[in-house]
Structures are given as C-alpha cells and as structure tokens.
Image (cartoon, rainbow, N blue to C red):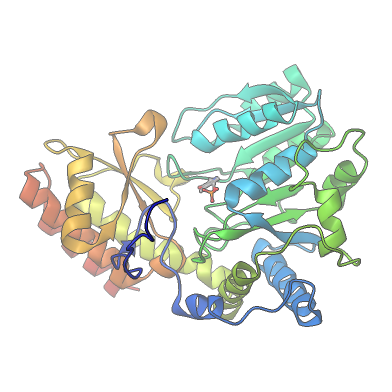
Length: 396
Ligand SMILES: *Cc1c(COP(=O)(O)O)cnc(C)c1O
C-alpha cells in the first residue's frame, strides 16, 4: 500500500470566469453553500424545497407545478426531460445548428427514439418554415430545440411560431434553456414550451449540481402514462414525483448544499427582477460587443440572433485562438474559451452571464484582449475597442 498522499490545502487560482460556464458565483451563493446541512427529508428542508420551486417558476415565467431542480448538471436535467418524454419508437425532431442540438439527438436515440433532424447552419436559428416542413415530412412526437446555443452564440428567435407548429401536430416541445434562464428573455408559458431544462452555472451564477427542469401538464401526462419505464432509474420523473410531489418519500438523497445554493441564486434573480436582469445582460454584453466590433472583430451570429449571454467573437488574423486564451489566463487570470465543433479555431466564446454580466468584468475582458492582441501581433485596432466599451458603459 502507498503512504498517505501529501496533498496541500485547496488553493485554486482566483479566476474571472468569462467562458461558457461556470460563471462567477455570487458571494451570497457561496455563503449559502457553507450553511450547515439538514436532512433531505427534514421538515425544514420541505419548506426550502417549496421555496426553491416557487423561485424557479418565477425565473422560468411559468405556473407549472412540475418545476424542480434535478440532481446533477444541466445534462442530467436534459436527460431527464428527453429520456422521460421519449418513448421507444417515438420520433424525435432535433436541430442541427449546434453542438447541443446534437447532444439532444444523441440522448433521444439512447432513449429509443427515432431521431430526425431539421437543418440550420451553425450560428443561425431554425427557420419556422423548415420546422413546418420537417413536421409535415416526419410527424415527430417530440420536438427539441436549443433556445441559447452556447456553441455558436446564436439565439433561437420565433419560439412561439415553433411551438404552434408542434402543437398543431400534437407533438410536445422540449427546450434547452441552459444558457438563457436568468439571462435572456424566456417565457415558458406564454411561448407554449411544454418542457424546458437548464443549468445553474450559466446565467444563474451558481455552482453546478442541481439543475432546473419544468414540465407542463401535457408533458407530465405523457411521462406518467408511459407504457415502458424510462431507461434511467435515477432520472425517472414518475419516481422523482414521490420526492418532489406531496408524498415526500425517499428516492435518492437530494444534494442539499446545491439546493441551498440554487435557492440563493434564484433569490438574487427575484430581488433584481427577471426583466431587469434580462436588460442588464443585454446592456453589459452590448458594451462588450461594441468593444470587439470597434476592434474590427465581428461576432459570429447576425445581430438579430445575438445571444448576450454567450458572445462568439471572430478570431482576428495574425493570431491563434489558443495563444490568446493562454495569454489572458496567464496575465489576467481570465477565462474565455475557444470555439466548439464546426467553429473550432474561428471564434472565442466569451460568456456574459449572471454575476459576470457586470461593467468591471467586460472592461477586464476587452482590456485583456486588447493587450493580448497587441502582444501577440494581431491585426486589430485594440485602443478603439477599449474606448468603445468605455463609452457604451458610460451611456448606461
Ligand atoms: C452547458 C450546456 C449544457 C450542459 O450542461 P452541463 O451542466 O455541462 O451538463 C446543455 N446545453 C447547453 C446549451 C449548454 O450550454
């Protein structure tokens, strides 16, 4: 046997997290996580569960009773939504316009679904006409789309049109709202979304671990009337109902500290006001956008689909994306990310999420990029970028 490992005290660097997530965590949320635990069936925890659900409904803009945090990261809530709504033999329509649409398709396939696709290029939203064509051709049972594609920085517009098409064909709609909940306008009930999942570590600025999920009655009816059990026991919503519903029976141990954290993060959303929060993301990310555009760098998606919470900024000529990312990490303790999939090497992905969507953060990003571009010899007007960001922030 080996000796006891001599491992030092935990002391990770203090980074400013401006990538695709996790985002910077609000100090109040960190504090909530260090609150002593109660049992997950303790009467006091039942109240905490109720409050967390109430706060989640507010953030999602929904009255759905079935609104819960799923134990695990955003992908767990994603698999809960897709795995419970897709029965073997169901046809599942998934988009091709980004990395997370592919993940939806893969999860639907593993759930036994027949996956069909509706195409849009990376960086563009789905066109309702194409969705209508796909419905006419395939008659899918479930339609999934990504509201905020973190891989491309594009926002799905025309959501009510998409859900209308699906409902005309008696299909259910599941939305990936991981990078929009709490950062970008999202209205579950008004837009006719049947099920939506999200993550805590993007625009809610909470550590990963307990992930929002909401289903309306139509979606829950389908889940509860399945002929075959879902393939995952852990994420079976009909079993989880025993814990989150009236019964409060043990299914698995709730991640108590993560629920504390999510509750506090959602309290911050309620205090700010959800619409004010959407407005803040747009203004602060707008100052970042103004800065990189003044440097001569475009954003990947067109302005109509721009996603304030995730800015896909074109890599300028004369530098490698990886060198810039390393430079800002080394010199500024600043995390930004490279492109994913089809956009690898072409864009930087710069998050502007939750507690990260503040003037000091975007000022740091633009200043650090300007320095990196100067030092590494990129062909940009770095000074113009700084001036534009400053001016945009001063106007706010
Ligand atoms: C981050 C993300 C996910 C997955 O969430 P994890 O917490 O990494 O499991 C899913 N969809 C989108 C759009 C995301 O940005």
